Amino acid sequence: MTSRRGFLFGAVAASVTPRLSWADAGNPAFLGAARDKNGAFALYGLSAEAQILFRVDLPARGHASAAHPTRPEAVAFARRPGTYALVIDCVGGQVLHKMQAPEGRHFMGHGVFVQDGDILVTTENNYAEGKGCLGLWQRSKGYARIAEVDSHGIGPHEIRAMSDDTLVVANGGILTHPDHGGGRDKLNLDTMQPSLAYLTPQFELEEQHVLADDLHHASIRHLALHDGLVGFAMQWQGDPFDIVPLLGLHRRGAEPVLCEAPLADQLSMKAYASSVAFNGAGSELAITSSKVGRIHRFDPDGTFLSAISRADVSGIAPKDQGYLASDGQGTLMSIDMDMRVLNAASDLAWDNHLVSLPRLG
Image 1 (cartoon, rainbow, N blue to C red):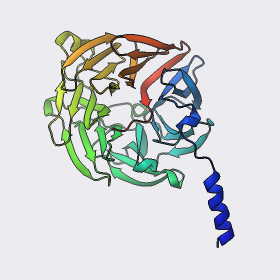
Image 2 (spheres, one colour; image 1 turned 30 degrees about the horizontal axis):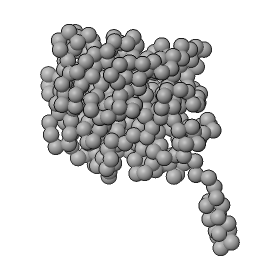
Image 3 (cartoon, rainbow, N blue to C red; image 1 turned 45 degrees about the vertical axis):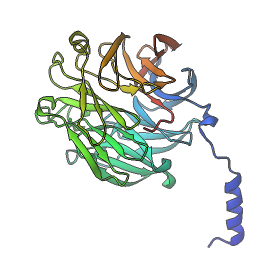
Image 4 (spheres, rainbow, N blue to C red; image 1 turned 90 degrees about the vertical axis):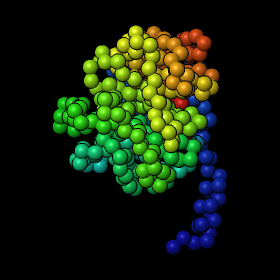
């Protein structure tokens, strides 16, 4: 039994224990994973002007990360079908916890914090049952897994939290299994049903939108949020020369709006969008295609604005009034009225995504 003296001592100790924030990690504005010239993988913290503030080694190739809204902690996810996620202290560089997916599950590369940062929600493949799920992990219990809920689709990929803790899930619709092609073979292309699902803060389905039958090959993969508007990026699983939309827009209670560029521009993307982001002003959004080195910019009403060519461009995130983008050649660039290189780290190859800190929709 705790004595009164012991209780008071603990209370005093807690009151003087410094509560670390992102300022203690150098106030990073972005997180990104990369491979260095020696083939090693790491998570990097970047300043607002894309200068490297810290590096934390990863055991294998990363995909995306989830940043705690206030504490200097990030969860780095393995590239699917990885079964590990690392909780990283971005001040000291230590791995605080290693999260292991349960038997019959693997991570899908994305996650998000909700409930003031106490609950981490991870997208997962429940390959034992052939469906998608969301893992719930509680930070205040040492990132213990406390529950699992349905993603309401197959192949959930990115997940984002809106300002009221409503969750938006990109169910890509693609069934995979670790025993088939190392988890990369697509097993249900004829029957896949991509969807955009909204879950309440209690993790119950609130709203769901399934793409039309003629677009059932448009795998919904990545998400961007601004002022209640959801942008979703798609990757076509049919003929890469099909003329299909790669960007959608949606507000709860309405039907999705699908956006296309003029014919030549649309063809140039080869039916593949890597990432999506609104600009810092919220006045436009953009998708990237690492396959062809293109960025397409759109007005929030879906009107095509312009295209930018940049070899191997993939990551994109809001920066100031514009964007920060990354490529596989180690370059980090600012995009607004023009494109300006901020950091040319030729010994790095940036991976798929940039994560801005903190940013809730």
